[in-house]
Length: 247
Image (cartoon, rainbow, N blue to C red; front, top):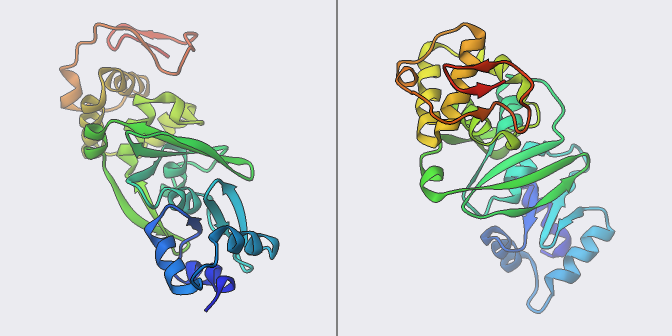
């Protein structure tokens, strides 16, 4: 076994990213690299051979000659060494709720930020969430084209988009995202929003009011005192006196 075997070692395990800070890399290094073989030399040679592409310091995309790894899987793979989940636009696309290009993929991290990583025309952004909020987040492990992804449930992705509007690119599509939710799903979304922030719950109430749809019981008791924007700095729509939200 040698340095040249590393890309296939990762692809057999359906891992699209080599992270030199991860335990997986340490395992691959012990198994494949001879003692004294500097990782930097190995990765430089793999890059020259077209088997990996550098994404950032210590991060390399494994290049499959047959097919590219889905961007959502790359995003999850970049943070595979840490607690994380993919949310908002990329989660909605994966759930089949919207069909839009992904100029930004937001990955939620526990209390730590990460520099954005460019992947072609997509920017992968790590967004920090307080540990207690992260512990209450609803996400699960799935696969996309065989690659492991930690993905927000669609209710959690809505909560993230409502609590942090800048985490979502296509936030004008939230009414479309919410349209297929049944009453039980809306109630779970409302509880998640209330647990996150009053502003998130207000925005959800506004969207449901605009749609003329079911208002979950847990949301009905909310009596907001502060005014919030549906989207950042966009006070050009209608104002809801019930939810105190500018649309």
